Image 1: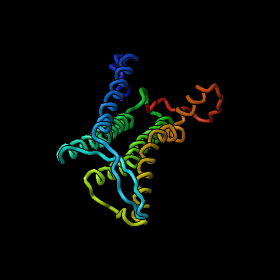
Image 2: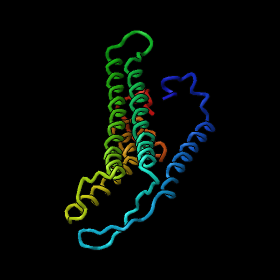
Image 3: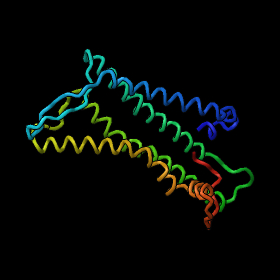
Image 4: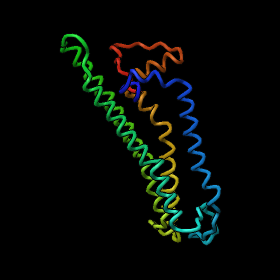
Length: 216
């Protein structure tokens, strides 16, 4: 984002700055997750088959602390990143669409560049939509769970199966977001495919010019 929006200032962000940023993100994630080790315990509950099961649940001293942490997690892990993605990718797409090549107008060249720009904009929009699709179900599930809003009766066999399937599907979707972006880039960005081929020392034939715009 900084390299595209503020190219003259991007040189200040060195490798050391990147390492510090990544380390800070990891530390923040560890601190947020460490709360579970203090306020979680395995609670017994009876399933539809009268068997005893254990569910790892958060135990808080009062309802305010629980809801405050729940909403903080929602904002930090979903709402804020979603807003950042929408703002940065929309800014990148808008600047690319407004960008014009120097020199005299060339209809053929301008049409080719417009097609390439639209491909990048579609790719950025796809990344944002996939982030929402992958993470929103889990966020809704956790909010319902933390606020004790029962969406199914786990005392019945059908309700228990619905709960377990929903639990795993929501978590699988969220974890899948970690690997979908490279797949999107591979199918929608020729630059990404070419760079990956060069990374693995492969030769690829290209029948059309590569876009000069680098989305990420």
